[in-house]
Length: 398
Image 1 (cartoon, helix red, strand yellow):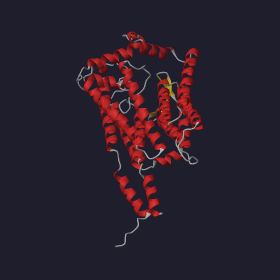
Image 2 (image 1 turned 60 degrees about the horizontal axis):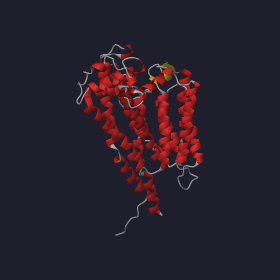
Image 3 (image 1 turned 180 degrees about the horizontal axis):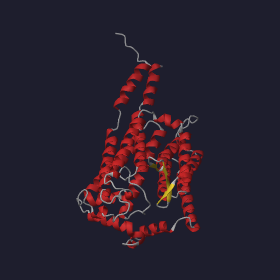
Image 4 (image 1 turned 90 degrees about the vertical axis):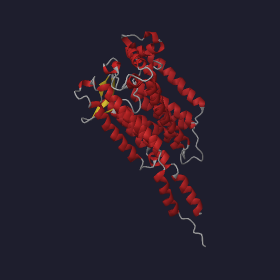
């Protein structure tokens, strides 16, 4: 019997078959489950209070469902694009991110003291939410292996270029001003430097320069009084009271604490349904969860978010190239930092800086950007074997 040598076409066909079944269902279904739960919690938080002067009790729920549908469509579409093609056009994504942040400074409108939104007539968008993902793509491309390199090495040149790109994003967001989102950008940048294996002295230098810049901004009066008050409330919890800067935190802790072990029941939260907790459908959505489903429900939510974060870093650790590893890690850092800061600020262990809780807070830009980020992680999982299979095929052909 003559044994036929496998051709490149055979390997390509086999490769396509493998990619059909390589899908991280755990990640997708957990994201879908937590987002669907978020829609229900948003309805519970808004059906009585009707924030924003709307008249339809289901307005925010319907709007979140539309954004959830858009997020799912984006998630599916992204899977047909090999992430390596995205890497080639990082400079175009950098330009898009900068353009969107400049556009909001020129044409945006102000909400709660920050000029972060652009009105598109049929909806509004917050470019800084999408630019988080753009920045991760750009930094991952810069710090990954270049064609001229024999091995992947995060040189001083790469650190300088990456720092300049990250600084551009951060400064544009600070100009809005949106200090909370700028902090997320900075955390993600430092996280990517660490994961990439950059010299620790570079990271320490950047941290030192940032700390120095913060104190200079503080002395120059760039940081507003209400922001200083929030830091004071964080440093001195006894300041939290029924009035002043500590009001939000006081009401949030009261709502979460009143939920007890099992909660008061969905739709039965007194603190949130009577609007004692400000921004309870956006930044303080965890207060609603704590009050209505209690400690057990809150822990379950944290557990699901934790598994999503773990899947991001797990996929990153099993990726086939540096860009994929940094890309999945960067998305993981975005979700991790926002979860820690958002939940932390509702229970008093983090300063209140206006960060949405991923997949749960009301808001189209936040939800869709999170789906875009997780879609890229899933994309890394789906396409991770393609290069390896082509290498095997080439070696077999030779």
